[in-house]
Structures are given as C-alpha cells and as structure tokens.
Image (cartoon, rainbow, N blue to C red; front, side, top):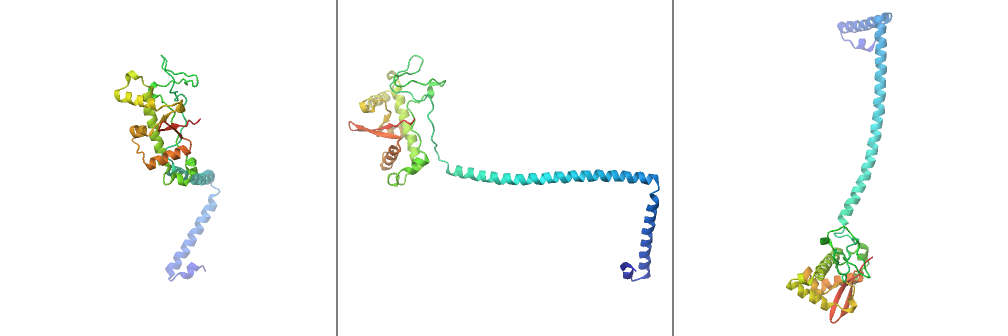
Amino acid sequence: MTRLSMDSTTLIDLAHHFDTKLSNLQTSYDLTEAKHDPSCQKLLVSLGKELEGLECILSQMKAELQKGKEAVSKAQEIKVTYQDVIEALKYTIRHLPARLPNKPVPGQHIDLHCKPDKNGTTSSIKHKAVEVSRPMKEVVYCPPIEYLTVDEFDTVPKYMKGRLTYNQLNSVIDDLNKTFQAKYKILKMKRTKLSDVNRKRYETFKLQESKDCKDTFFVVEGDMKEFAKMKMDAISRSMLTVLRHCGRIREIRGGGITRFAIVEMY
C-alpha cells in the first residue's frame, strides 16, 4: 500500500486515492492504443518537429547569451581602461599651467631696422621677411618672449625664486610682451602720423638706443610702468632676475640706463 493510501484517514479518502490511480491507468492505456491511429501519428510527428525547432531556437539563444556575456566582459575591461584615462585627464587638468610655451609663428618676426616698401613688405641684408598671406594688422613688431616650462622653473635656485610661483613668472612675461608690443608699434609708425604723446615717446626711445643694443629689442623700467602698469618693486625685480637666469631676457647697461633686451630663441 502506498504512503498516500496509508495517510488516508477515512474510507472516502482511500476510495478517492484508488479512483485517481485507476483513472491514470486508463489514460495510459488509451494513449498506448492511440499509437495505431494515423491522425495521432501525424500529430506526434508535428509535435516532434516543433520540439526540434524549439531546441534549435533555444540553442541560438544560448549562443547569443554567451556573446552577450563576452561583450559585457569586454565592456567592463574598456570601462576600467577609460576610468584610468579619465583620472589621468582630470589630473592633467588640475595641474595644467595657466600658460603654455608656444613656438614663434614664421613670418611674425620683422626686423626693426627694415623699411616697408610700396607693397608693405620689409627686407634687410641680415633678415628676410617671410611671405605670409596674413592681414597687416596681425603683424608682430618684435619676437615674443617664450613662457617658462615647468622643468625650467624647477631648475631655478631656491634662493633666487623665493616664494615666486610658476604662474607669477609667466604672468610677468605677458606684461613684458605687452610692453614690447606697445613700444615697437610706436617705433614702426610714420612720424607724421604720431600724436604729440607718441612723438615724445618715440624721441625718448631713440635716445635710449646705443651701439650695444643694435639689432636688439629692449625696454626700460619706465616702459613697463607705463604700458603694463607694472610696479617695479622688489618682487618684480626678483622675477626679472629669474627670467634673466632662464635666458629669456638680458640686461644692457650704459649711459645710466638699464635696458632689458629679449633673448631670441630659435
């Protein structure tokens, strides 16, 4: 006797148990006899084909699922790589200097002692102007002072730079370039087109020249005060000393005047 029949507490439960068993046996017998029925055989064949189709689809789905897992794995690897790149870029952005060294653009350097011809170009025995298709309003009248690099700043002796920062030094280079631009723009203008103020400046610039500063571009402290509003205090003089140490400018003394000349970098 089965466990279910042993668990029956009443005759009704026991009778229901055996009725279920007999019904299952009858169904099994009917199915066994149905195998000789042609319509049933066609149905079984059709069910078999559908089952094969389902198995094929299931196999394809498993293959696609595997591809998906591999794609997710590769995506995770790429994510880690890009996270490293993003962190590196964030670090670079945080430590990027406010000013970066730039290379002089060919054609921007015009010799101070050249006179423009009727076509607006300049020529000299020592220097030849580079032909560029550029509006004359963009002409630079002297070569720019190059910004310091971080490596150059690090090589400056501590006693010389003191508490000066990298950005402070490059900021004073901006002021110097502004001063040189303003001075040599006036020197390149025709005297007939100069205002009274600029004519006096022009004459002063000419008086400051000497044989030692021939073919050089220089300014004096007064020019820095006037054109760049620089305060020529101890800090400013310390920055000029550092720039001289790094080979950006040099001093030309004579006639009671200290001239700060550009050291051209090639």
